[in-house]
Image 1 (cartoon, rainbow, N blue to C red):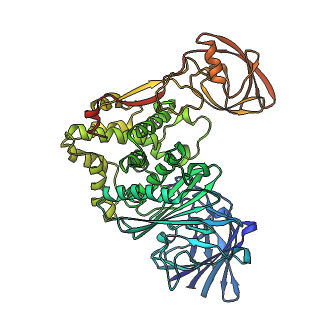
Image 2 (spheres, helix red, strand yellow):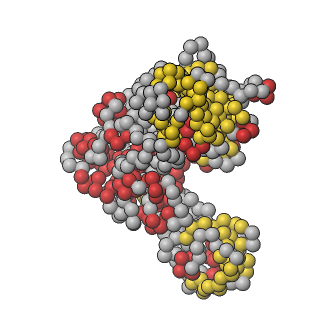
Image 3 (cartoon, rainbow, N blue to C red):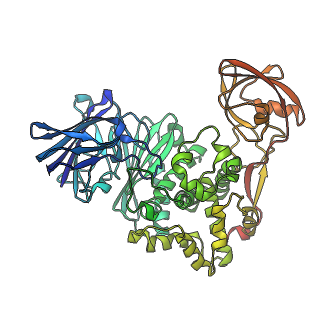
Length: 586
């Protein structure tokens, strides 16, 4: 058995200290740290945050050789080898590690070296508190199984069956708010770190409905005996990462409902959808996963064309399940779906990259987006969700409502996830072919094209009208009806200094033709200083107007003529036109 210890040795300097008791070891034994974390497909080189990796045999320091950016090798025999190192933790995200005098958080992939060749051995982890009276009320939150006499939320010893389990249980420590609920007989805890005024009773009641809806979808039995939502509450923030019995989340303080509030705000429904998304991953990607991830190779990129299925299908379900659980009404759900579609239709990158290519290139394109991303790539999350909708409605239509995408997920769970068997590139197609009673290759061909999915006629079959309109403003997210602009700048911008700062430019739009670029500071149009109402001001001039513009690129003043053309019809709106038909889906 391997024994790890971790201690927040200096919260002010953001340093964890880690020791690893390896035992008897021989020359050539190697140790390594993952370069990426499952669920976040980008090489992050966590080992760059390790400081002074040393080895000891009793009191004697022994020789270690660093082989590359993330691996070390033992150079001599040891009777009782112990490794010691520190980890700089200053990444306030769900992916790595963060430590200061207010709290500590870490993923095992960021802090625990692997003993190569001994990955299947059982592990114990001792979590120690920081020194000092000011930390006397700190507690520990993790879904990792308890060891010895450790009580839940206490510092002490925890255990894992192997290295893979050790690094799949993130840990939060500090003074956090704790709330609990039961979902199908399983305890679920909610931890909120950071200042907040949240109504935890309301949040738990809504999460219970969502969790039970998802557990029931997969047969009524949760694949764990305890689950933890650990949430970092910030002034502004958003993010989540799934784990085998927990999820790490980041949300904005204003997204959580305060006590006494009963309305469903946009921020709160977004938070519930985030929880729904990460919880659905308990099945779809944590247990049902591509064969390429069985097991994970965390030393380098693991390419797969299947992320559309694992993030796209999950993104279809996340909003939909908040509706199915009764947390939002039908109109709100259709608004949310319209917003998702708008994020796809506003990017010309969808005409340049297929869903399978988007999945394969996640490592370098999706996770390393720049200001031109909307013009070059498509998201396997959002367009993947649209494909999942297309698949769901197609199955319903062809089977007369006898089957739907739930049946696909249930088959994947029964035949693959619960059996620890990875899916191949054609697994989903084979199951859908069985569900509809014919070869489904024509449906799955849409994964490999850059054409827009034929959703308009398909939604009409289910009583839903999909229409497109122009945006009403620079901040219009879509999903709702309303009169759009007749013309627009053709760029996203934010208010900055004496004008607006260009965030990104739509290919072929008015800003593109003018010559604006991301980072430019547009200060004047038609001799007048511009501000946050720029698009509405342009709308007063109308299509065909020619306007002199002035902007700074770096410290150089540039000028040009803006010719206003019609605003793009790229904002999606969904509405019910036939209640009886809509009931076949919603």
